[in-house]
Amino acid sequence: MPCSTRDLDAILEIVNEAAAAYSGVIPSNFSHEPYMSREQLDAEITAGVSFSGFWEEGMLVGVIGIQHVSDVTLIRHAYVRPSHQRRGIGATLLAALRTQAGERRLLVGTWAGAEWAIGFYQRNGFRLQSAAATRRLLDAYWEIPSQQASASVVLIAQGGDGS
Image (cartoon, rainbow, N blue to C red; front, side, top):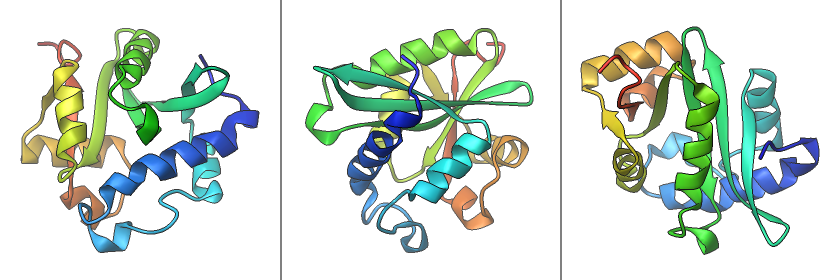
């Protein structure tokens, strides 16, 4: 279900709660409190990221963003409240997003050290790209600092790259 502007505070809360898992895993200059500020969230939305959410008993408990860039669709900011993880919420959000992406290639970038995130995407039909392919894809579709790119990986939905 699409999120609206009235959900922005809850989106931030979810992102920042769940991103605590990155502590000690990502480069220190990218690890800060909060992980995402309101200004950063607003900038993401202005750049075309739209969020969908999963509600349980009237409370937003998971979010996933989608951004169409050129000829691909990027998954952006997929997070579930830690208290609600391992219940299939992330997989449900991902399945809905795949429907939204249609026939476009579906890519996700994440921190190379976030093994749990990489495993989640692999269990849900994504293939980890080589270092060279990751760099090409990051350069083509993301606007991130070089140091962040060197600490990141890209996964592509199987079947979303012509295979």
